[in-house]
Length: 306
Image (cartoon, rainbow, N blue to C red; front, side):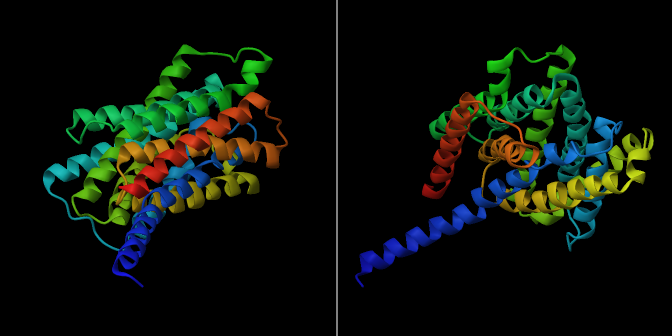
């Protein structure tokens, strides 16, 4: 084998490892997050929207904290970042889930997930982490457009979705909180801290912060087998396992790219709705899914080429 061939094999292998260590874990986390809507829809009737997400965060955050295997040692300034990140983590379930209840899954999902990568890009730029690249801008624009067409497709062909101004604001805050803790988590990991320790600390503190949301609302849904199963799925799979993968992916991927890649979540949710729940998607939604997939693939290949 020629020396040039050996070099090409090494380069290709290295880029493949980087893709596996960055985009692939994040996309895997997005697949798990995509089960959230289907799972929460199985909760007993009357379960408060914010309490469902908060219950998963309480237990999932505890699992992340207890399993991180090492203590997070930070400077005073870094601990302030951890606290802000934990507040942002706690803010997501108490804004996004009520937004879903007020505006519907479609509108809330588009606003929260579609705004998150935009917020992440702008915040990173303001924080001096670099101007967004053209590839990121193009891929994000395609992914957000595809996400909107995918999720809003049924409303486009069957009437207008109910719109609640306060619900829209809540959904936007959900996107903002998600981008904030993604950026902070990425920054702390870039400082050399273990991704498990960072996620364990932020989510452990966040779980304590949202515990009153669970205890001060109707908890009768947690006294049923279905309620316990829903809470365990949200805690183990969509919080513990997903954020382990997400934290690992942040070690090799910027928060701007990561938040765009997680737009795969509504695609997974839509497919599960068709396969599991028996929903039907119009052709315009399938077109949106194709555009979304193109944007994510374009961004993933860019991450491999770096």
